[in-house]
Image (cartoon, rainbow, N blue to C red; front, side):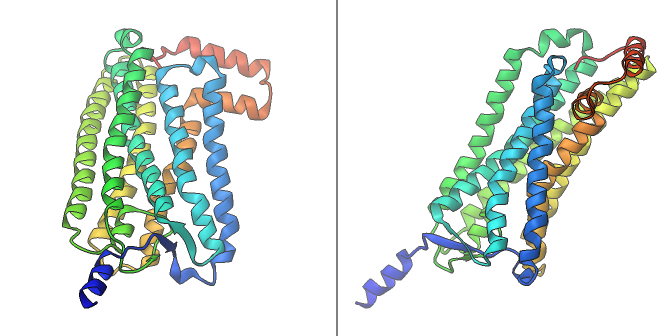
Length: 336
């Protein structure tokens, strides 16, 4: 009887959980539902607006703009993987979720984050060819190459996200059924798992280090060469445009990687940080790219901004059209 009881305890594992994010904000939770809903709707609208602009305007059917549209589509998917369940948690203090639902959410969180990283690599390659080899741009950046880059991005993202989910699914969750987080992140789930989790922790850390180190090395090398090549361009207008475009990409890269780095450091090193602060950093990490990326690309990318202004403000005056035509004739355009 005793042995059977011990065995049943060791084999026990919760199959449903309660997500309890931001426990210190219990009194304020109902008041935060409306602003968070507005944030979610704004993320969807802003990203969808830029995507629609790229799809609707034939002049934007170029690799750089296609990659921007794909990145923003991933932002919508990433926000949708997090926000609905997060909002439900602010309506109900204890937010129930099954193990299957938790693993599904975890998969889409990491799959979309990794797609972000991979699309940033593809955008760096596009700018490298456009600025360092402008005469060969149309020959190199073909639809076939875009398809290969998209396939690589999907395969690489699946190759990291799937093992994390499979490994997590094999763990036993016997400590508690309460996840002190607003979403099913890998570290949050491991915190309630039992047994020896050394391999899980090392695998998660190794995958993040390898992915981030490899990506940052490629991005750093690419943009160093891009900026160097941009300063060699004789035309002041073309040089300014090249640096401006690279500046937009670098802003997005810094937003994604710095927010992710700060979250990882806090989760793994700063054990004394409150649960609310950890949740806040995770929310910034998961939602900030979706909120800022459409603003960065929609405002800083001249061609996209002009088409959005035309859609939102109606037809332009003849004087504006003539002025823009004269500017475009006087400026040597880079590919994309």
